[in-house]
Image 1: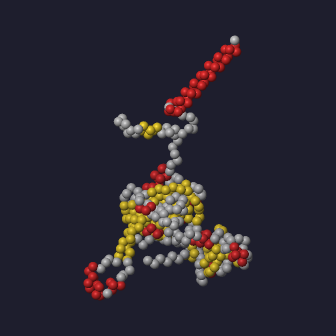
Image 2: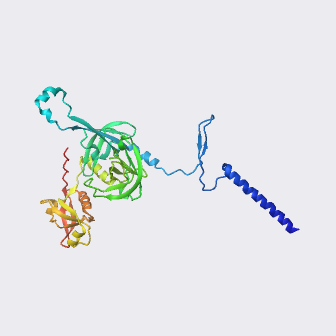
Image 3: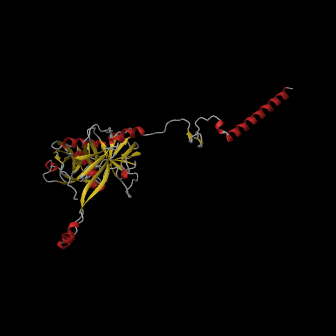
Length: 396
């Protein structure tokens, strides 16, 4: 009796479970919206086709907001400007213009030898009183410089000073209460940090691109005399020169300067001057109109493994003194060709580029202690630092 009752109950339960599973299958196949969403599942957009009742409605279930640099962009972009320059370019005089017969017949219709050449770039407002940082090559030899602010207002600018050896220039706008950018720390940058490049590529208007810091301390590129570039894969194109490289908070960390490219467009390798260098140049130009650097009057070479072996050095660290200017600061201090410069004011010299930067940072007229290795022996030399000569202007 009990066994028969249990059998009937089991049979009823099995039939009920089968019906429930079948119903769930039918509903999940033909009416899945009737079922509650599973935890962690992706919820598709619900789209209603347009009808006479109104336009198409697109609804999505609320979720966490995607990562965005909107706040950083809003903070930085008002400080980034577009720079338009023009200069007069004179074409070579045609020999026929010197012919008196030719001039007799065509003298009143001689072609104008002078033409206007226009170029564009970007800049960064670094002071509310009107100072703008940009690249030297953006404004070099320009007769007229026009700056377009982010709000569309256009102003004429004058060059306060430039520094060709770092490819930086400072402009001044006749305006007040401008949106100055905040300064970040390029010394705190790490490879992998997110950065944004802001500028005016190809003249299309203000554009923001994103990427990461792909390398630090890039030197030996032959772009500037003093090189310590931030390398980034944020897209930098012609017209971005002089624009801002900012961190994820919108603070200035570099001035976009150059790209590595075989096609003329971005290939994922761009270079920016660190803001630490830009600030130093800015402060000196605003204060005195030019940049002053230390100089000791030597020619240096890289310490290669064969050179290190020949001079019985422990490694390739340092800079080989290949030449000394007669009567220059190093010559007066007793430094000779063949010496290997190891330290400047207690700071190690890794290579010639590092030596150049260390010496340039010294104040002219000050005394600096330099450690050199001569014939296997370490020696200290006290050098009275000179003033670095200005670079020769390039011929037009």
